[in-house]
Each structure stands twice: as structure tokens, then as C-alpha cells.
Image 1 (cartoon, rainbow, N blue to C red):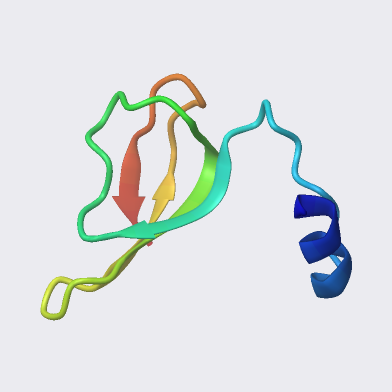
Image 2: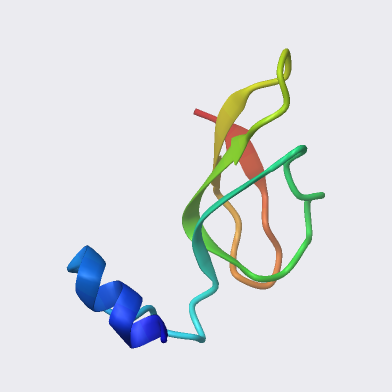
Length: 67
């Protein structure tokens, strides 16, 4: 299914070992959380607390900072 979606969007199938490249949620992940690729973009989606952040850490220890 992932291949089909990527084909429709005309993007490459993401590598499973590099972590998330783009994510969103109600709050940025706690520093040190694993699973987010370096340079991952994270968008906070709660009204009044919106923001866009970039991971300046590693895949094993994130460090999100405001853009």
C-alpha cells in the first residue's frame, strides 16, 4: 500500500531506517526521543501554540528547535 501511495504522490518510498522526515502533533517531542531524522520538520497543530520546528539532533536523540 505504501508503494501505491508514493506512486500516486510521485515520491520515493521512504527508507524505514532513517526515521520520520515530517511529523505533526499537539506538542514537539521531548528532547532525546528517538525516531526523528536529522532535519525532520515538526509542526505543532494546537490553536494558540502553532509553530514549526526542525530536529537539530540525531535519529536516536532528537532536539527540536523553532525555525
